[in-house]
Length: 144
Image (cartoon, rainbow, N blue to C red; front, side, top):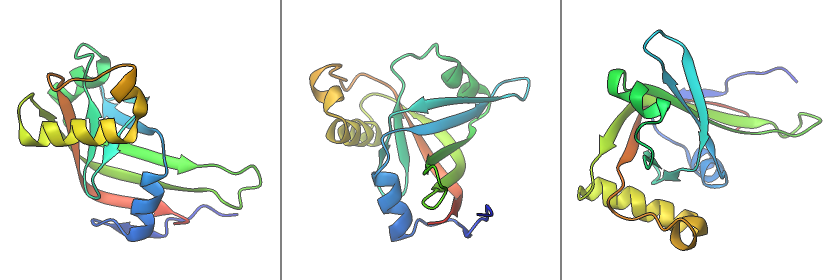
């Protein structure tokens, strides 16, 4: 099966939204000050337009990268051994820090807690945690 980009748009289709909702983690990609890609898997929330991730460890490399360059991408995919069901989505955009008390921060935190029982019961994220919001500017997908 040949890899091909099926669409490149700036709004999510219903199929793309459903695929994103079905995923447990995304790969969050930022750039280091010397131009290297730094990619980490993260739990996330999605409101149909924007992605939200928490920033509990503000000394992590990904957050230091964002302070210098807020252009990021996230990637979500699924893999099937015979390649018959491979699909994915790559989203480019700008990330912004959401401080505790901001309406968008509370929204992101609420969405994370709704999606992951661990954040409600085990880790008990609270409203004092900084969130990062990704506002998409370009969306690419394959086989969706």
